Length: 125
Image (cartoon, rainbow, N blue to C red):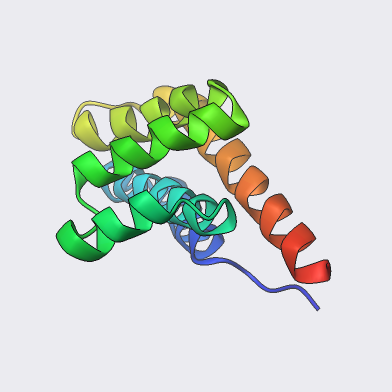
């Protein structure tokens, strides 16, 4: 039995929008998928300060960026690049063509896979 994370659900929705040619909606869903993967990684890595910040201010841009910075100390700088792809998809969503989206979405997929792998390892322990 396979359990999908919220990040995976958003990613699949993004894929559907991309297939239908709704590029703006696809970009928004890819971003949301990355955001959910970051949240999952925060929980998995027990980042208490980030969790506290999220409880106090919500998952705003500052909290998400703080989370990515803290995660980079534990997981490596590549998480910053993956998050940058998500932010680019979201902020430039009205100007993206399909080829650019296809390129950036690879980082989102990698981010989700990393979060899912770490989550699966924790569940199986």
